[in-house]
Image 1 (spheres, rainbow, N blue to C red):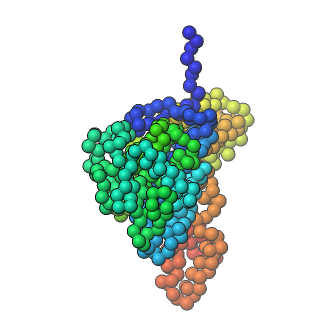
Image 2: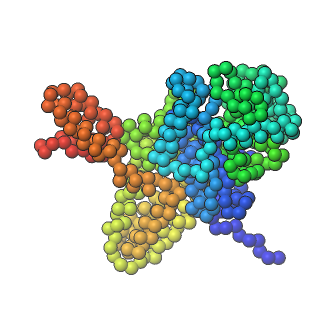
Image 3: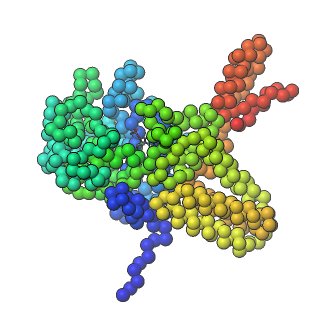
Length: 481
Ligand code: AMP
Ligand code: ZN
């Protein structure tokens, strides 16, 4: 018998919530991975807990691209209509579109600062083509006998789908205590049923795509956009935070499978929460930080990215300022190491150095393709730093080896994206130079008129933004914190 073909060297093993086990992953159609992650509800600025999920999804994306060699077709949506976005726009006295436009802009800005690659698709629920896809999905569900209407709204009847509850492993009674349940006030046949299309109240935005005037339910948005944009079913990977397993993802499966009679997604990836003092970071608990709040404490976005990806995505991560400090320190060590590599000038090459680099490459690839074990991947990098530093101390390293070590770190960083981000930050101070100079001048003028409160205010606000002022005989100089 011919021997079984070996899997490709860098085949990813990914934990699949559907089977509760790690499985080898390959795309189902050619070399392109079709992946969907539930994006932010744009009613407030995203917090760094949300960004833990998006940074981990980004690490998955980069691993699939750079270590496994696949092309990506990824979608992350914006939920730009729901009770909270509507209330936010009404409170601000602007249109829903204007309100969510601004929050989407801020999300993109934060995501870019955190080195998150832009996905190929970033659909908005209220884009016309998406609303039409939602209308079509409701029609298909109606045809297949999965819906009913009440008071102008359309519901999904869970009793019509025997496989309901497979992802969340629900007991037949359905609803787990404490899970995030639809808090709609509409009457339903069964408490487990969920709304597909909500009849609009008089002062609410409304669309008619075949199910009467109203707006889409949250679950419907994701099913319709994923299938419309990624050409399923089944799509390869569906991702999100663990809080979405039930009911959101269970309901996405019900809608997609009820409409298409095909499996919806092959792999379900769920990221554990970022905690603060052992509670989930969330808007409702008011225990959250945004990226600007972290930057205002003088930390860099690269350090936050490092922290968010430094522990395994299936473990909870407790956010602390000491953790931020350590992340800054770890990044500084890598930066110092790269600078030290530049000092190597000896010719030749040394087998021990070559071996250390090879070992680091294989440990890193093994760690990341082993269900994205980023912690082990970082350990491989710091082993390399220690081994090569020892080689430099012992003068047992040549220029060729130093270049190979630098290339290895660059390759690791294609996946982690922290060193590149730091370089970009170094090239650009957190406050534009012209603004710093203008503020120094304003502060000098304030001191001249003995308005020390104003002068101190300028100094403190710059310090919060990561710029320190130093006064000496020649005037005032600035430097990064
Ligand atoms: P939302 O805007 O609430 O729909 O959340 C956007 C994404 O962030 C979802 O995938 C959530 O599961 C995820 N998320 C929310 N809070 C946290 C947290 N504390 N840690 C990690 N992910 C979170
Ligand atoms: Zn979703």
